[in-house]
Image 1 (spheres, one colour):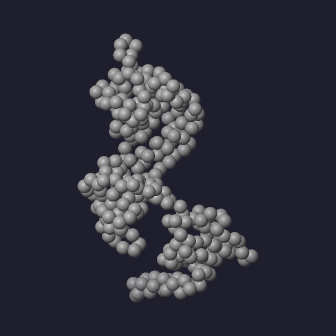
Image 2 (cartoon, rainbow, N blue to C red; image 1 turned 90 degrees about the vertical axis):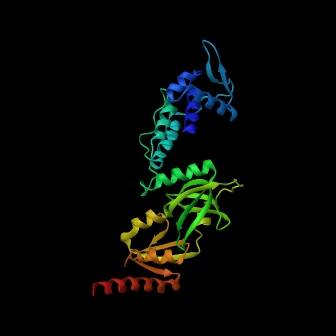
Image 3 (spheres, rainbow, N blue to C red; image 1 turned 120 degrees about the vertical axis):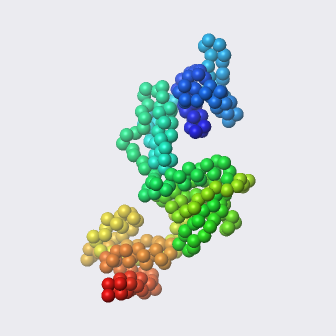
Length: 304
């Protein structure tokens, strides 16, 4: 990948005073002509590279511009490399692991990443997620529309989107783009996409950054209070933190938290079976009862 190679070239130049184009060509397994094009592209991007001809010639970064690599400690560089390695878990390749090796080349005091930090961003969708990310990333960099069938809690629809960013948030991957159906920027969860295809080119518009605050994406419209049996303490801590409940005199847990919608509240309470009682909002207690009766009726009739 050109971007990976250019980052690698910069890394080598930051760690060595001067290198030759044939050395870079051999290291990155490309032709000398490709290296010359990369150097020209780096110069156009504002990196002042100097090329000297002759016996002691080579490529170097202009004196006074180079960043002293001692500004990055070994532990800081290890953290950077661990982050790069994590991207391989969703790219379906080992391109970032190879980039790590190039970043640490020539610096004996740098390691290939912190062996005690292991990051896997692929979640449960290891087979389907990497192709989606690759296609969407290519569409973003190439300025092409994408279309897909989208499954949301409200509807199933076909969307055509101008893609701008891939975002990893709330343990899931999302696409941020301009939806032609809604005439506005929207956030789409990759796990809810099927039949993903690229389309024609689009002219990029001014794209605002998404507001990913919890209050904006998951507004607490309903304040829930529930009594939870003590054996589910681990679940409350895992899902909402240790401050979401207080211990009652009888040992039960008084849970309090804000929820976005009624369906989530009912489903969440029901998921405890008989281990949870919804106290507030009181008007939703009947919804929980109807939900439970519906399950009982379906399974009771099936077994008769």
